[in-house]
Length: 260
Image 1 (cartoon, rainbow, N blue to C red):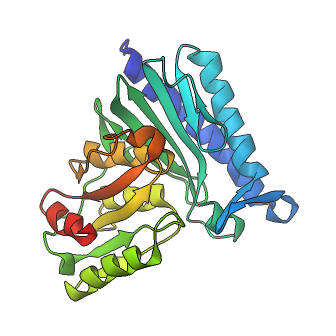
Image 2: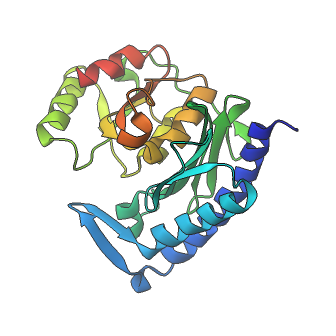
């Protein structure tokens, strides 16, 4: 197709696989990685940085007119350019460094302030989630759909957490979920958990604050699958982050109420 957005979407499929294979190589050699602390329970390794630099280089070579916003290297040109690539080279760095497979590479594309598409690739499981405004939601090329439950008792809700959230805030959310008869899960990767919502493994996802690179790729997949999320990009969500609520249309109000 000649549409420039779809061309980028097609390009991103090859790019995320290349980046995933690079990250997987580091994962298979964890003992030799250089790791630095960015804060409490927040670390970065050379795998994160090198994977992001690869993605950034490929995008600059192919679409030099676009801006880039990566977790490790920050924003570049986002104030003046219409197209913005939003990238998390390894979402779930702590699981990654612990030898746990629940980590992924996330790539999203925003154009004129609107999320166009997203891809999330989990190299260890070789699972590629993708979808967008012009593309259906898929897992390894096959269509996916959300759970159909409309009650919190009908599935598992993933609760996101990070050190920007006060423990009491999370505990209040958890209490509301449990009192409603729900069950919770957390695997250390917001992007991957959100994709599990998109493909029906989880009923919903909620987090009081998450950064854009951690979730935009997966939000695009959920929306392509017919799911509902809050308006994450509102109030400068791209740069400042935001709360995230996700699920099918029927369960969404109950998941949203967990943050009340």
